[in-house]
Length: 271
Length: 268
Image (cartoon, rainbow over all chains, first blue to last red; front, side, top):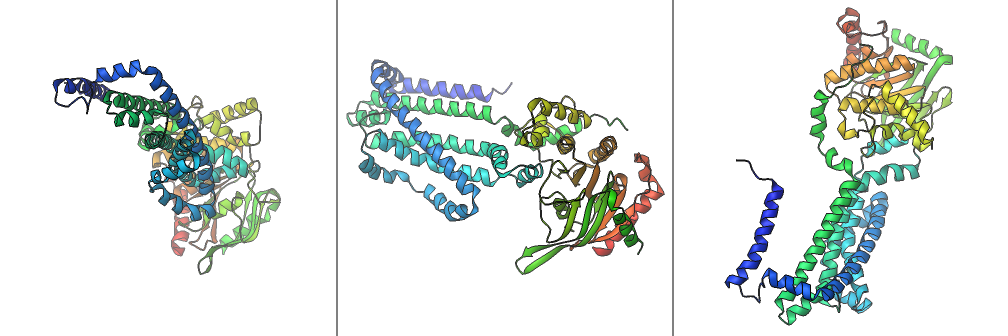
């Protein structure tokens, strides 16, 4: 018997979960207050589609703005810290330890400073996503093979050319890994801050409906956030695989060595 | 002191030398003062000659090559390439080929070969023409659009040689270019290099720690001592060109290889 493809298994697990979501509440094993059936959740999502749509737009706007801050500042700061030894020795330990601080404790301060509207969410989530972007950019620049720079210098590359033609392309894969993580963190940051103090957005809908014990609407909001994150993840993956074709394969050196023997290296004409 | 006489002899032909090293010394800054790496190196590489430098690991032969490439500055002495001092990398005078092929993984084979040209803003069409020509010179037609990770170790070094030759520099510096290859590939590549050299007539300075490679490839072999590195022998390889694999089994080949080994062993 052939082993089924992992992808098939993944879809099967997802389908099973969806079926359980529908069946378990109907059998009465779990009260509907704790888990409303899938059909009921979807129905609510459909009838309130304008509310959910508007909330999703608010959240999406905050996420995009926060990502711009996190990526922009993160790449800039990471490039400086990774590229300049003075800054690196001074700041990298500080940033690394700040990364471990639960930044959410600062959120009440942010609302006091920037109000309960979108700006406090954008800034909070921007800070939240900043750290992985910054740290991986710094790491990406620091771990560039010095041989690349030596080769570029031997070919007469000036310092600006070394930066644009070698350092930037060489650090793209590592930076991208940081962007993917940073982006995911900004989504978390936005949703969490909306749940804490807000008057709009999908996180706000979760909190609002939970306080009035309207479970189907809580789960409808959760479903919307789930779709947002999955959509983001797929988008990030697609961009990444397009940008760094060489990375995925280059990481498997054994393949190249194996081909060494099989490769039809042309026989020297002089032999 | 026959080898010293040889050294003077080679230095005497200054008019036709491509690279001239005069009383070069290098000291590394260390925690307890300076660590001498190279001591009083004088040598001359004639135009169109294939000169091999052999020496034990850490003797400073790579440092010497980096200085010839303008990638590192010596503490004392002068280095001339075609009569002008070497102060900075100058890819139009000197092409460098490293032990690691150091191809950029994000560029295709052709783009890698063209890289030095694109740095000087050579027009795209001219670039393509020259990189294609280099690609066929190293025997890799049809691999132009592959990426480095799709090439074997030997093929990568061929691309790296093509990249070193693309600006047509009169001098080629090679720092153990085949050291990372397996022995069979290494033999083939050595032979290939001689073929390329015989068609382009470049001056080659080639660093290796393989005695066989040194004798097989070189017109002359310079032997360096263990650190701090000095030149301790200069050997003319009397084998005729073109070299063949069969020569490796001859007495002359064996005697030359043995002489190098005795010199290195004395200082180790």
